[in-house]
Image 1: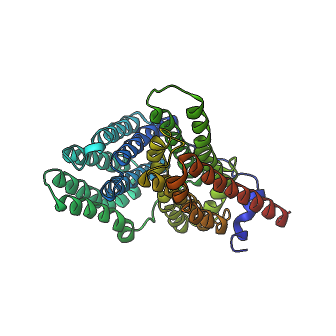
Image 2 (image 1 turned 180 degrees about the horizontal axis):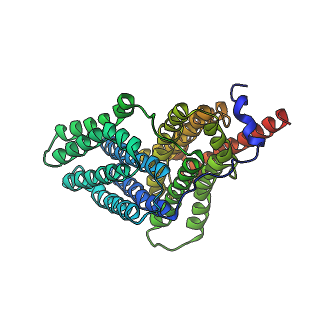
Image 3 (image 1 turned 90 degrees about the vertical axis):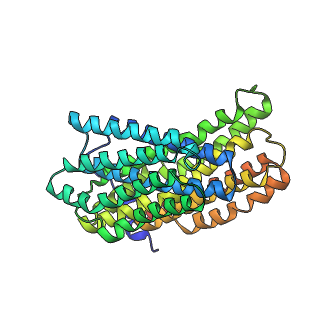
Length: 385
């Protein structure tokens, strides 16, 4: 089996020692996920191709800089007072961006761009405290961040198609930055890195859960609403289990990174914890946006857009999990990709049947993915005992 070489990690003891995530980093992640709530609001308000495009452009810039801060605190934990003050300033900048997000393409683009410029400036300033090597690495990357922020500010002063062109250019700069500068030179600590992203996923999954309460809009909790809420809750709960598998996958992921040399470890971390997490996080945004529509009239046919968002969100998440598994060789892939494709079939079920029917079908698919994970783990444990 292709992934069997690293599957031994499922029966090994978890790695020992190493830096762990601080409470300030967790606090930072809460501020960051506020932006996810705002993106779900944007999509819920405008479930068109324009709305999806806006969400994707904003998401990429936010996710890129979150990744930058994750690498930063992995290299330079915020133990000193001036590090903490700067990190709190970075949080405040994410708050500014979050407040500007709903109208980033309609009047608040300058505020968004200024917030983004503050974020990249604080990021560069903190890396300057990380020693000569870290400072040199940041000097290679910082110009891409700064020019991207300036492009967003310029977009906020203009109208029409050029606004989207400038946003796309800013995103393009961030995409090509690691290709041109590389990711070598960063001493990555696997334990901290895996834990940090795991905590982020918990918070992001919680945002989908909170969407249940927001979707009811303070209405009475009658039997139909309660039943539907419990059924919908199965989706984020099941997706949590698929990702974490009671911490088993965290151990495997940490070991997969530890086994690599410094250069390959950084490349593997970028692929698994940045790129492979993109479909998972976008999937959660789609689910959160759709849940607000789903819970309102659960036993009626679901409109096309929220039906696609709900099924598409689950499909993206499961596809991202399969990609994540494949990069680190820590879990099954084939069934998760299959389940992602089958999730698309839930769209006509919800659109022609009812919202609840779509939710139940998606819940069954996620349950099957969990069963696949469990069988894979048992098989690997049997092979390596």
